[in-house]
Length: 399
Image (cartoon, rainbow, N blue to C red; front, side, top):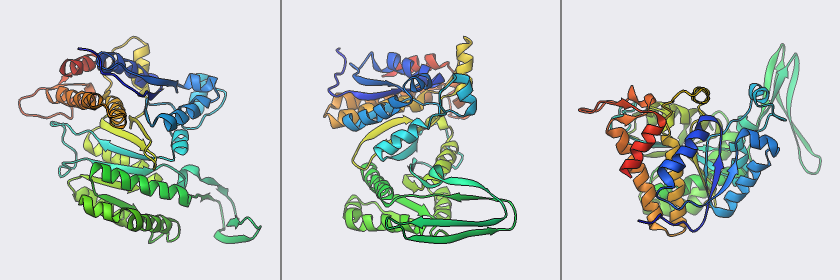
């Protein structure tokens, strides 16, 4: 039987450390034996980003705009220790942040559910998808120390007119922070959320704290409401799904009591925190998918976790690891499915489905990586810890 053909390449963004090792194994064991894989390759490993002064990250994002679908490995965002460790020329920005800005994308994170791994919140029977606005707020803030004196917020318009607001009259030491967002970015966020909810046929809940941040958060609320009424209300009603806005503390209470099956749209910081909380409550961050979606339908798939540094140091010492590759597998399957959908290749879409099904069946049969063994409880099935390669091989036998 011949390999499944592709028409248009995926944009492939390689990464760092243990996830880079898994990346190669996943391609060699799970994909290339079945698919005549076509990719446009970009090395986003930290060493090559340094060689290119991070130009490769920008190039990979622009290629994603060209081809429409990308798959990305986890990458290092360097801190001072990493700059020294890798002898870098600069403390480069987050590759994800750069790609998000160029694609104008929203991040959607969803858990991978497996029979035998029960969420810590037992009412959760369906996925809760976190939609995180990936621009602005505290992540593009300006902050600093303050001493005794007055902190002010000043806005100067194009004609030189100034509006000044008092922030605080400090009697002693303190800290100040200023952050921003743009209507354009909020509008893109809203449309991406509405489109994703329609695609998944899931209700959309959006939450801020507009009772306290009446102008800043209030602008988010108003933009969402306007776009929903003008562009999406009829589509949502036809699909039989709801859009609801409420305060974030109310949504947290509703989420805990819910059975899942919801897209929860969050501002940048809220989404950062809540996505990790939801992932942990479902069992493992290694079982959480992440997809960046632009408002005009560009998709970039990745795992929600990092580069698994601790396991990488063991690997380079020649020690065998049992690193969980499931979220990275699902990044590949998601990208292949979307590529097949856009190119009208049902065989490629079917392969993506088979790959995911084989991965879940392998775990449900009791074969898994070490992080899942303590979480797995299923009558008549005793979990067995496999190395990463053994786990991938077990999946390949089921495809």
